[in-house]
Figure 1 (tube, rainbow, N blue to C red):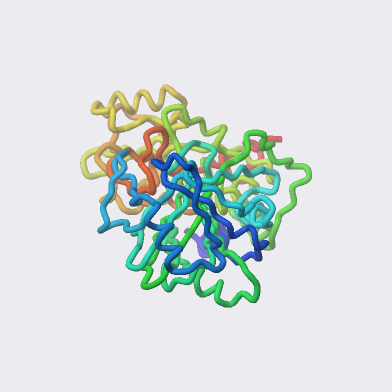
Figure 2: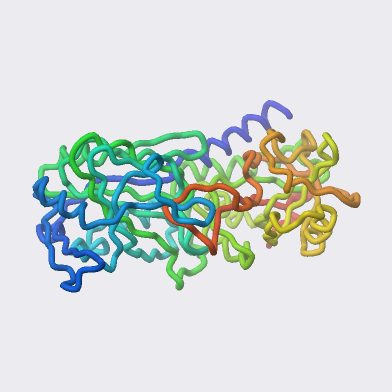
Length: 433
């Protein structure tokens, strides 16, 4: 790899990871927005208790906590209660009513601007109330996907006095923290704290050392009537996106990159909910963060691209090539790897090899044996990875995943975006004109 190509590749990688996968802040709320009405599920009197969460006493918060149930979490498609992993209380939406109006707060405008393509629309759905008392916490987990259209979560933190309970977020080797208690202490008028993040971002609630951390959690969905982006009027939203576009063009102009043509590969940074009905055509307009940046750049440059699931092909200790497929297949159901390979190729898959090393990924040791497919020789297409898939970037079988709730219908997988280019000097032959 030439020095110029290495620099261009690094520029592209930095552009993809420059935007954090979350947003946070505080927001003033009208006085009645702190009112919460609640009751126990087995109480025939209904929502007979009321609390003002802007000035609640410790006794009132203790009563609210006592009206909740112990919070569970999802492991291997089962709801589990284990206070060594999660110690908190929850209340289902049928047992409370909040006068906080998230749609009128301005928070959803912030979500729209930071987490969603400008052409998309967002639907917000109240999910749970949680109370974290002293010594409560929730260890690292990812939110359970509840459908292909779910992309994130929004957490509202009320100004109930507490210490600790910061939300820690981790993604692609980076970590961020939002300490709502500290941020709310700076506010000069009654406010709530809020944090929204993509659902595949790992997060945890740090130990609450005193007081009560009271939150509302909302699920964020793409609205059903979300239109496809208009390429004609779409403008790059930042200097970073413009730099990305220029760097892609310069990479394609370098004759040492895929001199005979092939694929420019982007291992997407985020995970997406999938099941056996998933179609990548539908997913392409619902990409997140830096993944959406790649798609927008390809659209503007009229580059032909596809989303693909990556499956690894191993023979003995030597990696020969790998298979990209537009179709998701649950690998846990396959024991005959040769038949799996043929099935992948028959449904539109293609064999690929790394243009530099012949490998799909850098760390072979992390792959589950189910990724290993073998069989007839196929002439692989060369791929130049701008950023290789991480060790867990291929489709994931369900084996062990901590979430906030058990899931049966969807689970997370990573995909790759493949840009198809012609040979040096005539790249445009494979562009969509």
